[in-house]
Length: 105
Image (cartoon, rainbow, N blue to C red; front, top):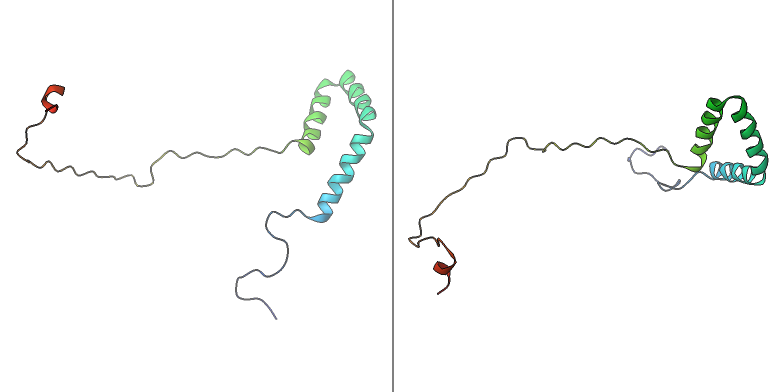
């Protein structure tokens, strides 16, 4: 029977990582950590022959350690472009104070 209600039942909650992906990342991390000296040697060899390629490799490997940042758009425009302000001046018959001594009684 199909769920035609539009309400999600069961499954992962939003933000819960996929178990297979988490295990794969963990295995890859362990592989790198246990072979860090070998990775450094290989990186140094590539850097000697082709520094540009070494930089590209470094950037690709950094994606596994650092999250990618996304550009966001900031919109400083007001949502309602036509704003009106009405000011009504009411004559109360009380004179306005022209200086501080007019206020103090």
